[in-house]
Length: 398
Ligand code: SAH
Ligand code: SF4
Image 1 (cartoon, rainbow, N blue to C red):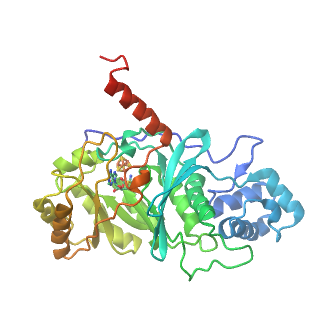
Image 2 (image 1 turned 135 degrees about the vertical axis):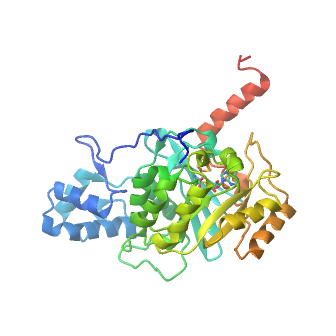
Image 3 (image 1 turned 60 degrees about the horizontal axis):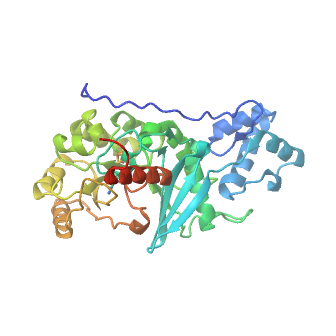
């Protein structure tokens, strides 16, 4: 690890327990935490497991938000739950629907902060792109989120809450008393942790939220339908394999340390070699298949034939798929998207070396929902006011 350029994570996470007298939000508690909370409320230990199962099923399987309808629980027990707990989700402030069907939700969380969540419908399936932080501590130079400094980590409840809100909007909760329809196609069938923030810098909350999402008695998405994207927080990669077990994507984006230092500055802390060593171990530790290498195509920066050849050499021996992402523009971005022929030529070289190299079709560009375009609307407004001031010279600065 290079000793220079330390990248620190200085964040505040909202505590799980509400202050004295307040009600504890059940959403985001793991099974173990829920069990402990129910016992603390006075549930006899012997009954706790069954009560967890019942409450869990109502909330995560049927999407119910009201204790009073949990009819397999005694009335006075429901009242007790009501007095001690709440079932609270973040709030959808606005929803935009793109011409291609992509839905972007602006979600307000405690403290008035906002994050974006994007639903991308596909043939016979659909992917939800969720956020893990408000802003980001990292400053990848091609990423819009990276221009917004970190405000705070999302809680586990706010992370799983995004999935629940999307299921509300898609009307995808089975009716109480019925099964999940696990075998039929689901509108929300996959999750990618590719929204705002670096998920491995909010590890515990991301892990707890994904445990809830993967739980077979609830939302029940398998770990192979969840992909976590990291910019390369090397020490947390093995933990991700062991404690979550989901698929891994890495924001690779460059084939030399010199270029990657500029594009993905966390590379100054953990360089390409250290990153690749951690990734090499991942499939074995998580018993999963390929790693997805994300590679944003930036004109004349990282898109040459030599880059493509270096890339395939670097990843030799790692079961991998290379996802080529045409750069998505945002106001003031210092890069341009590579030409289409260049992207195809790059894809071709990678493909001929034996790797799948799909070019990611930008989705929801018209509503600024594409990769790397997410940012809190309030922040965006603030930035554009600042930009306008700078452009017009009206901000009084020299
Ligand atoms: N912070 C995590 C996950 C969020 S970003 C990470 O960096 O991996 C999801 C993907 O979009 C990453 O690969 C990111 O590098 C890429 N991305 C960011 N800005 C982009 C842009 N303007 N155009 C295309 N892809 C971008
Ligand atoms: Fe943060 Fe990922 Fe954007 Fe980098 S690419 S600034 S890690 S959100």
